[in-house]
Length: 315
Image (cartoon, rainbow, N blue to C red; front, side, top):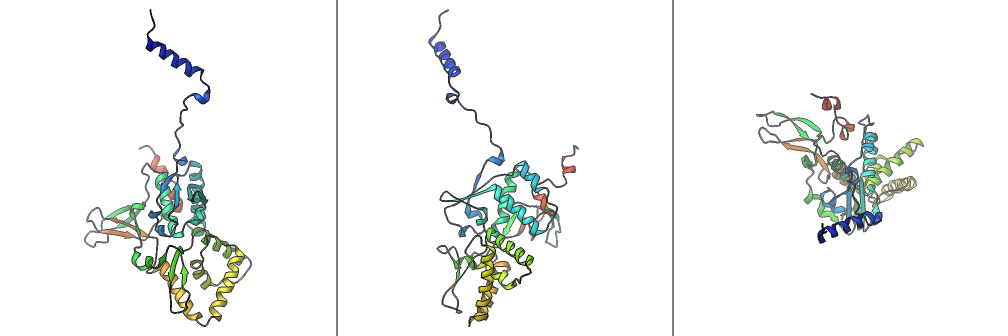
């Protein structure tokens, strides 16, 4: 039986593939695990998005099993112990670059920490594993009890755009306040994760050495530093200069009053930035129900299954 031209071409193709070197053969891609896939997070989604350089790129990924196991050992709700664990997650799962230069997760502002954590949690548990907070409808004619899911979409942010952002100057990367106290304006901005961590280390060092810590300095100074990290010696010198400046400056009293009140505004009043709480409409009457709680009952439940025994037990 004669061989057709099509059959000849088929045999030639098969022989060429068999005899080809490994580099010439088509490579079969191994599907990536969720923890190996980084996704972009638009900077504008962050509450302090305007304060980052416009060319900042933030990427994030899901936790892998080993990282979840590490977090699951957390047996406390003490913020001083929970915070380092959350920052460890950010360090492992977040990539930040600016003009192709790698930046540390510590360049994130502290108000954006929790939003990033929930972003990572949602991509880690895409199968609908939810955390809930029980609430009661605030409508006295309803009083319906239901759950608010701990999701970014249910987060309620402090709405203060008109109050605070009119003072923001992108060229300085901070808020600029002109006052009657002095000719030079005051430059303030919320601290980054790295700067907050520097102050925590400084507090531990000063406490260990039985040195005095000024509560006024500790409250105000983190908002007056345009840096992501400082050494212990730097902060000690800052405290000395800060106290002497207030004592010896002719307008020291007025300066303290202004700075103290401005920082209060950033933390709890008209300039407050960040997550205010959770909000969801009552499924029965439609009333917007709010709760200031933004964390599960146990911090460890963020990245493990609460009540796993009942969750996985075959019905």
